[in-house]
Image (tube, rainbow, N blue to C red; front, side, top):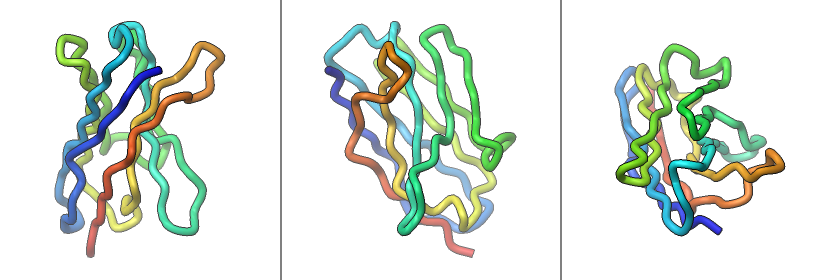
Length: 117
């Protein structure tokens, strides 16, 4: 099991930037594939970005070109740099560890991002 703690959320204006951070503990972080999810009230959870143990990344179409996922294995950290934020980016953001079977098995408590127009 991996313990995950997110930070960096907040309330910003449209067009601003935020960087979310997630620190992991409990397993060899450098071997883990990680993802950032978000969930807005009344909506389904959405996979925003993923990063493999080797640094390969994927993004939801809704955030491509604006968000960047990265990792620092020396610090057991995964980041989500969010630029050009829009009101529709408002959600609780969660980092999660992907298990060997492809499902996400460990989750953080979430950090709230609110973007006003």
